[in-house]
Image 1 (cartoon, helix red, strand yellow):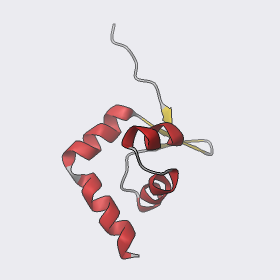
Image 2 (cartoon, rainbow, N blue to C red):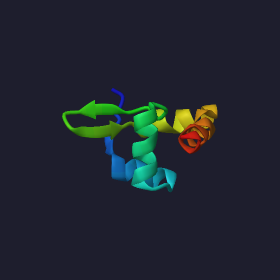
Image 3 (cartoon, helix red, strand yellow):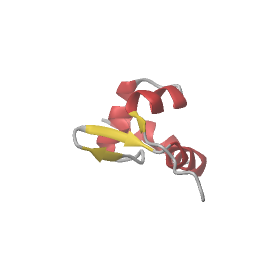
Length: 68
């Protein structure tokens, strides 16, 4: 039986990526970072976020944020 990956919080994913919580919130607003909304909280799977970073899409997230 495979182990189920646990959900992590916005604070956890910010620490994982070594960016601020405000940066994560900006990426959520832009819809660039993979996230799931549970009630009023944002939850993340580290594997999804890591795949997003490895795909190179995260490099465009900052450019989109800076253009505003």
